Image 1 (cartoon, rainbow over the protein chains, first blue to last red):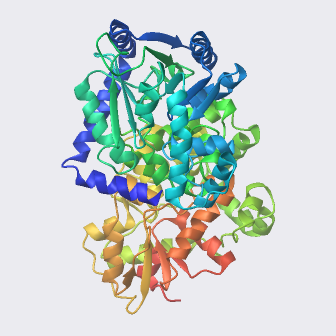
Image 2: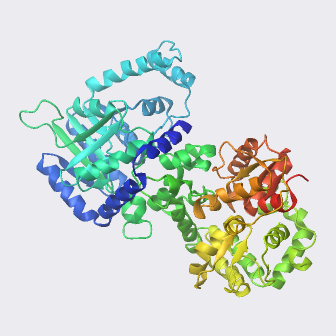
Image 3: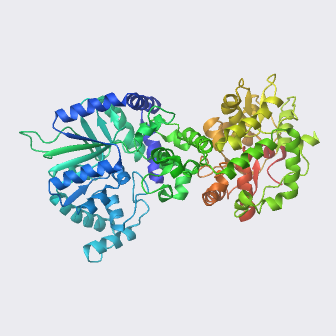
Length: 427
Length: 210
């Protein structure tokens, strides 16, 4: 993760004018989001004109229903998956398995997690906390024979297992990093090639697209592609950058027979037209995770089973409701490093501050907390009462260290020493 | 710390007034989302401070609150507010060298670094006072205080403090220009046996060595 962080800062520094590029990227994303209905309509028209099938899914359930229906219709028994956070969000693997269809993750990190039956803890590097020994143990179980924790051998095992899946899968299921509205194209960036194998070998390709992940033109895509890999891993480009436009046409050699896109809402509409709309500009690069001092200590699992880091602390309460994720806006010391690192200049720490205000004003924050701050503010409203409170503070410090927040403080820290004489009295 | 700040300002040749009606800028409540409570307390700032002279504050976080958030919160005109080291640096203050032979590590508190963009001035002042600066491995990394964060997520808060303190082991003292960071790091060091954590004003006014 440190390597990713340094990778981004070096890659940004190598750009002739990264601030100008960030500004352009932000402008493209915000312009698209503020006119999303039109861009979606353009995308759908272009996608369908090239022979693709579009399904609009308002909820995770609707998305899963459509995906399962397509798979059942073509008699699919095996689905090869390329990495998709949106697919984790809707829990499509569970839906497929319930319908008797076997999904196999073909991104190496996701494959490892699938074997371990765990969730991703980083949106770009899903299994980053796994060691070679952990992976060797999982792979030994799959192979039915001991696998050594040597990287070459682990890669060889993965290749052996996944090749079988690529060659026999009936359906390929991917996400999409971006969709281009005027050409009806989908763009997928990977480092491992699963994006290509999953989309060209099976007869059917289904892409799951968050409704906000659009850019208007290929030129706009080029701006975002200059920033996405640099911000995620420090690479100028990932090993494979693919732009798909339509299924295989008559006379063409490559491509699936059927290309479907499931355009997913699942709460994203909640952000449109309001104070949080700019969160929809997120390009899921993970730069905010890599720079976050809280993520660094807490790890991804602490934020939830899908998204993590600062982007999750903002997005998840907005998708699922503040009452279902009340701790997330406070899973931050508000240091602002995320805002500095965001390639599309989302003011993440300011959005967190705004969400904290909502927690209080919508009374999701506890009555005790609200009362505590109200009482504090009434006491510190007048200098005379403030003076009395500091007097009491000195007297009752030891007691305060045993109650409520004071007790939490003193579990790991000494109490701060209050001065014997107030500065204002000495002057 | 406040007495140290006043001493430095006087040594730099300024007349210093301390409005006795001041209480707090309201930031603890503001950062926790309690706007109404914050507004109530922030009004004490407006009542205490006039605009006829610059306001100097030995706290990066309070200076940020007053400069960037308070006017909109209470609905008043902006103030000319300076964080202490920035004020001393712009006035090209020549202060006595009280840290000769001392090695000091400086922690960039988040408001100073990212909101106020003050990073050089404290270091130049410390070097000017004779100190040798020891670079922290990650001076930009948050210390883990974050106001209520320190008690909402105490385990993470302490882990962040420990990383910061570990990085300063080679120095005689860890210096910060923010009372929030100071209180948290010092309280943790007092429990775990780390080296002294002192405010920038104290390091400059009295020297880092006890």
